[in-house]
Image (cartoon, rainbow, N blue to C red):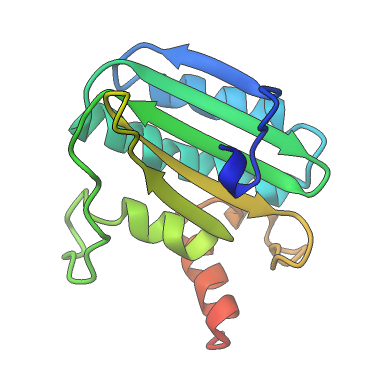
Length: 165
């Protein structure tokens, strides 16, 4: 994670997760604990994006499943590694309203200040990561604390960044 704001010296939280859908909840709790000193809206956004990455790994990847979190005063970097060789597909723009998939990486792309996918030839699998910054980012309005971290808030934040709000 060192190329994108992580912990090059090994600091941070690394958790091996069971390769089951229930790992999403464990990943969210781990992110919440690691980001306890950061703004609430940022941690909620990180929980949402972590849910997307862990869900994608369980649905489309292969064991083993690892979560790495590096928090500092400027923000949070989260990486999800699975053993699958298939690279994630770009977010689809034409997802019908009733469909339950196809939006995950689009949400990550819209909310995170930086994100990417790394595949290392000497290791099996891939790592999908994101970085959220506390400084210079658009946080939720004080009157909307319950919407932070929701898909609706992700769309609002994307419009704010694009200047279309």
